[in-house]
Amino acid sequence: MTGVPWNIVHALPNMAMLPRSLTPSFIGQDAGFKYSMVGGGGSTGAGNTSGIGFDIFVKNKSGVKIICAIDGNPISVLDGELQSISTVPYDTFEITDTTGAVTPNAVDVFLMGLQMVDCVNYTKLQPNFAVWG
Image 1 (cartoon, helix red, strand yellow):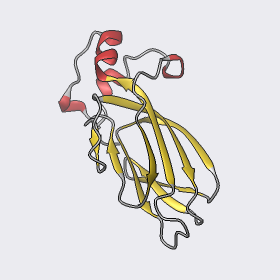
Image 2: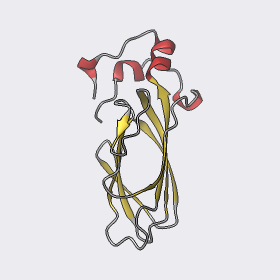
Image 3: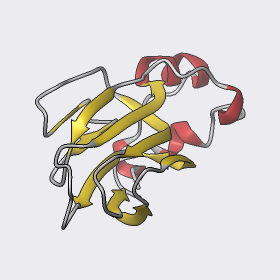
Image 4: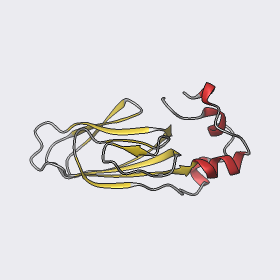
């Protein structure tokens, strides 16, 4: 994993029960899209407050199977599928391959997590950059 402050993650209560105070969404994306939850920005130029990602929803309407990556780990999303991914806490999400897409710019991405300020308030800890994964 990259970019996640594990000292804070390990101190958080049950992550499934935490609110999702950070919910950036991106409609009509394609290969090359990348977003960092911790960095608070991405390839679209859109920016949000820093946070830690918990959940991802990807809707693929491109006409082909696409490949996405969560902190560099690839996952496939079939055409017409709404893929719901609850994984270990993450920093980056990207769309790495839409080769052969019948409909370009047809991937909708919804990212959810907890703002860093909320993580600090819950844990009473500051992100420790020396233990970022």
